[in-house]
Image (cartoon, rainbow, N blue to C red; front, side, top):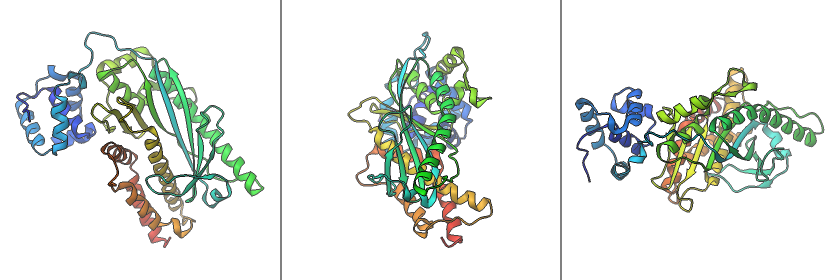
Length: 385
């Protein structure tokens, strides 16, 4: 393989990208400040790495797996990976995206009273059914998923054509408020209809988004920045008054593109020349570069549905304990159920592609679900559930 003769910001950044580690984790492994990694990515080959840092990079590279090195050396010949279009003002849009919103709510045994058609199991093998969501502003493919373990999840699919990503961020946050209220009302209506009385349930508390970027004007570094902004939209808006979230403006958005914005905790699950994929605490962004070889968005949706179902279930368990009550739930959905679901989510499958494995690991890492499930398992085991 080719050897790096002289480390610059470009080579240092490309090595980090090849490892698929978040900026913060890559910096920790090297023993440098995360801001240093960000400078490498922004300044590229114009930044010369100090000799002592070059030695650190050499030692780190020597410990990398062959697969990481293969990606690293392959990317050395592609300057567009980390260097943007110099001297041009980045376009802010327009862009076409498909928004997937996931709104989970725990309703316990009442989930069995709501009718739905059986669904194919997702990666965690959680039995569930689905019915039309009937959201007033969504695609017909939107559904209400009813999990046997007591969780209902609204999966809302909406297509958006936006002039800027800031416009999309504003729509995202404003619609979250109305969608949470709509989901609460819809669940209560369904429970009232099947129980013959006013339905009672705790209201849903959050919305998670996954975006499929279909069309845009961006390439190279600008495209990577756009994906980061889709994953971390809070940097594009002023949210001091959530009901009146406003866009920060063209200058802020253009500066983020020019500087090459990256969030230190976002995990990259891109595949060389196949697709760009990022996962963060706020959601997931995916863009096929080679659609016939990229993951179908249905794979990401299937994983997120199971992840959100287990997150919601574990939240119910932990919230009950914090409030001084034992969780009320059938033993078939107790600690052994959570242990089995976690094993199925984290264990690689023989038929699983490398893309799918990277996506799964990125989503689980950023959701922090494994640690949450382990804590919930301990609580239920102590309660003999």
